[in-house]
Image (tube, rainbow, N blue to C red; front, top):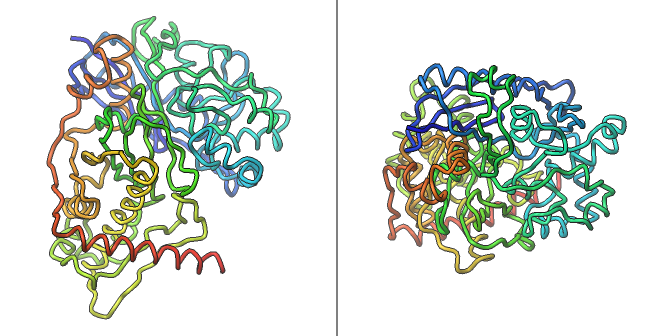
Length: 498
């Protein structure tokens, strides 16, 4: 048998997993991250700690699995942050996390000077991502900026260190480009005019490669730290979100993905790159599968709302999510159910930073179960607006099924709600492996263990329980969607006027 390793350099920590060529997960190990916040708005991590965590996790995976020989490794990781490296490939800056908000002023500058151009070129509006962060280092940390030879992301940095690569070999794979600020995502190259506009030296930007590209082999030092053979091949991998989509089998048009985690992410899979220039709701990035794209949008903290309700508003007798689901299950889907606005930290898709959460339509008759069901329904209603945005951009786009991953997949009442609101089947993934599994699939692809990612997904991804939409509820939820949309407009206007 042959085996591969997938590694994810995530926000919460590093996760490594060993998979067989047939898709069996043999072992998985997690090491918590160590972010530090020395000042308001500052969130950084030590790239060398991320590397050390990776080595420890891989070594422990091998011990637990009993596997001795690995065909290849690939890495996924946080997508919107950056690390500056020197000529020898070593970090000269901390990891500037996607959670770090110091570059807010640069976002405003970029948006005013070339916001639409960047959205058209990259597929994503300027935000707390590469472009504004690079400009922040240039303007606020000039001495450090002068030492930076290339900018990379955490997974790319760890891959380079594992292989002993210098800055000349620095890379970014195509799935990150929509966060770059300076790329022509369609053509998979850097946009010379945008670089010139913002006086960014193109030579500070890494080479652009495919997710299954071979980037190097483990050095003797790193092989020893990981417990692997010297010369083990390392593949580029991809961004963590793209890897999660891959692990759900979103390798053909029409397969949508719901990442029901801390953030609630809705993504379609299409064969066309179409920036959302008018609505501003969707981002669009390369799929790990060649020739495909993922239009996506998300609720920041969509999953956190459930924990907030459980912690703050549910008493000790209904303290578990299963018990809350039991309260919400018998609630009838009628017009008396209150609406909940899930944007407690501001809306990101489209950007409405002043908007905040709310219930609307409350009466003294409403119960805890109805309030909780309204929270669940709000995510489905928001997804319906994302679905509408995809249809407006791509009228021929299909929605075959929505595959769900993340902690929220265990809620049957939530899954059925999403199916009914979207009028799209919801499908659970059995034994889903998230981003490490997607990275492992790319390792196997790069090692030649299967001919395509589609064939890998067909063998690795196991579809589980299916929730069919109730067509008799379509009209009811269409009315709810329109009412929810009008509530968002009114509440955003009210919030922005404060």
